[in-house]
Image 1: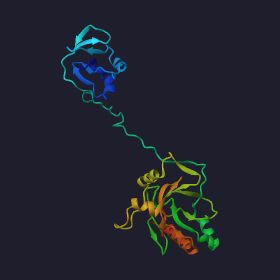
Image 2: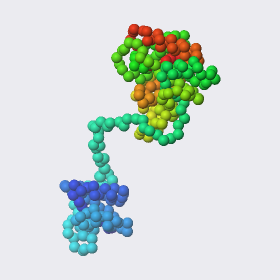
Image 3: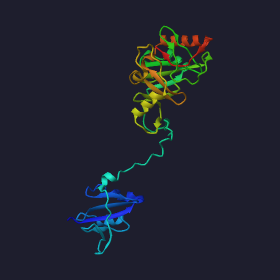
Image 4: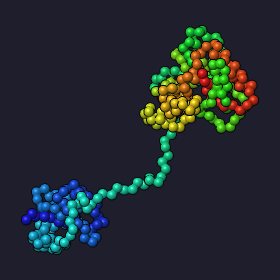
Length: 304
């Protein structure tokens, strides 16, 4: 008959037997408030491990199911008649319940921080007046490499059409209240090289324009940043029911402008128009018309 060993421990300490679940030769059974374990007594028996599990000691079984302490010859008890099962079936692990099931985690917000990395500017946000003077005085070859779009400040505006330029709703409204008139206008310029004008310069990371000398924190990857911007920043409404949704348009038809002062705005490529003296004069006429208007107005980027 195959020699066997046996041990018992309180059910309150059942986790001590978890290290034996990978042994297919070990069986287990429950007797009241005690857990019994037994297995073959052979060269593979891990006596040190068994002794550490059972504080009362490890027993060897006789043919009559008598329990003899290891190293002794005198039976001290008899093994009860029990319903034995493989230990891996009787002892099933229970995973602890998360303490944060009902808690609401505060998401980490994206912010801008200073960066020492070398960056090449591709966009410039400047005031309308110096841009207008530059466009009227600069050589035509300097104008050819640039495009621009207007953004009205401190006012809310409805689209006003001209032959080539119309002022459209801002992608990132700063106020929900309607006001009257136009306080001023900014100009976003794209080109290489950019004109030497005062203002905020931007560099591109994928489809996101950041202020020169800044990057985002925490340092997550670019796809994650753009997916967050897509969910949180408002984008212009499609022009018709058949238009492509903004979620599909944003990544290929425009870019995100992340400004320290106004937040994140979406700019479509088709909103930028070539810088010519004629287009600048038309933009000036649009601004003058809006400044003279008495109706409620939305601030925003200009459309082609």
